[in-house]
Length: 297
Ligand code: PGA
Image (cartoon, rainbow, N blue to C red):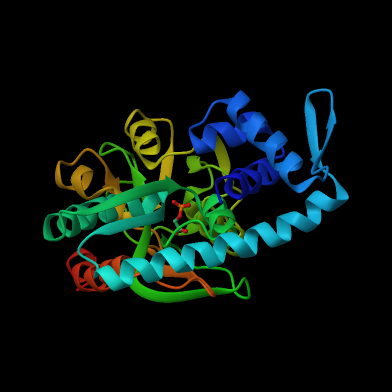
C-alpha cells in the first residue's frame, strides 16, 4: 500500500522531489521505493530522461489501478472508523481561502466537542481544491459554486456576499448607489487566477462593461485588505473576510449597484468516496453552526 501511495504521488507530479515534499519524505527515499516497486512487479513504470521523469505505457495503466486501489483502501479505513464510532478518527478537509475565516472558528468548536478527532486543514484556492477532489484527497471541501458534471456532490449551506472595499477616507465613501461607471478611474487590487472570488467579480465587471484597471494581484484576502487600506486601490472581497476591519473602521464598503454580489458556500464531496462518520459528524456540526455566520439574517 505504501509503495502504491508513493507511486500515486510520483505519477501525479511526475517528479520525485515534488512527491517527496507532499509526502514529507526525502527524495532518495521516494526514488528507492519506486525502484523497489518496479523490481517487485518486474516492470518499468517510469521513463527517466536526465532529470525529468514520465510514466511509461505500463505506468499509465498502473496509475489507473493504483487510483482504484487507493480509493477502495480509503473506503476500507472509513469503514473501520465507522465500526469504532466517530469520537476518534481523522478529518481531512480543504477550504477555499475565503472560507477559512469562518471555517477555522467552526473547526475550533468541533474540536472542543470531539477532542480526540484529529484534523488536517488545507486552505487553498478554488482551482487547487478541484484538483484535490479529482484525486479523492479530502473528506470534505468548503468552496464557492462547484462546477457541474465533475462527479461531485454538493450542498449549498450559506450565502457569501462579495463587496467592494475602500480605505475609510476614500472620496467615494459617502456616495449612495454608485454605478459601475463611477468606478471607471479606480484601480483595483484583486485575487490571483484560480480564485472563485476573482472569477465571479471579473464576470460581473465584464457583464457591466467595466474595464478594470488592475494594479495588484494577490493570493490572500489579508494582503488585499492591507493593500486597500494603504491606498493601492479598491478591493473586492467576501464580507466574511472583513468583519473585524468594518467593526474597527479600518475599511469601508462602497455602496455600488449590483453589490453585494451574492455567491454561496457549498459543502462538496466526491461521488464514490464514502463519507466517514467523522466527516458526517463535521457536516452536521457545520450546517448547524453556519447559521451563526449568515451575514443576512
Ligand atoms: P476563493 O474562493 O477564496 O478561491 O476566491 C471563494 C469562492 O469560490 O467564492
